[in-house]
Image (cartoon, rainbow, N blue to C red; front, top):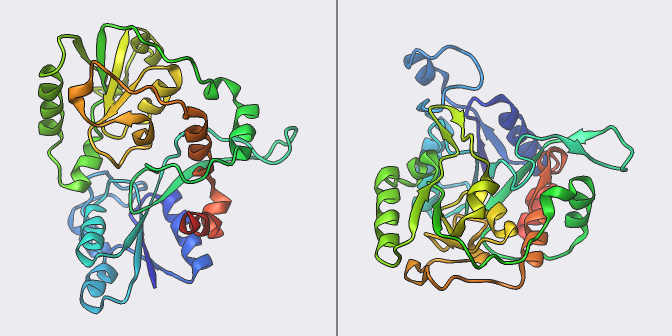
Length: 302
């Protein structure tokens, strides 16, 4: 039995419900009284810090009948689901924004079609695909024909004076039980042990406002980038800037990155970025692929 959990974000809740219908799983609704007790207005999406209670999750801790959990995003109490999956040593499937086309609907079907679709990523036992498993180029070629500017692979850049750091996701750290500020501080301190280069911390948003400096502007003077899971690392690698990730999983940049920050002055310039990019594209799914169970079956095969 597969259990998927509602969180109060209507769009992804619908996706999970559809997936469970296709896979004969169970869609588990959150306990409404718990939310009412937090005096939260019945609006959607519910606030990120909503603390949910799922009666099915509590029951499964006792019955242990489920063999997998499915949840979406890092907010609204999903750390309970993640921690219980680890405690029970069962699989978990994670649904969230795609590696490309984060909030963009693009054409699907024939090139002259007006049909558009949103995309998602679905990952098994991780939060991003951190291994290369499928280098079939068909999906890459399809996406590249639609948005060629997004899929340019530039030559490796071997100059630059800055170490560009992408801070970890606060909510991902929260889900994993990590201290966001300490993780960032420890990363900065470790970098300083191995280089005298200037360290630039690039926040995606500050006080709710998008960073006014373009990513490419920062990359033009970057020696390397350092991240935990940021999709900006993918763009950096395609732009030709070498990458370090602070873990050997959780990030789609892992196959193209070193994890040993002591090597920050001798970065990695892999020669299989095209294959890596094909793999990322193969792990981006339409909503129809999610709700029909096709994406789930593909991930299982991988």
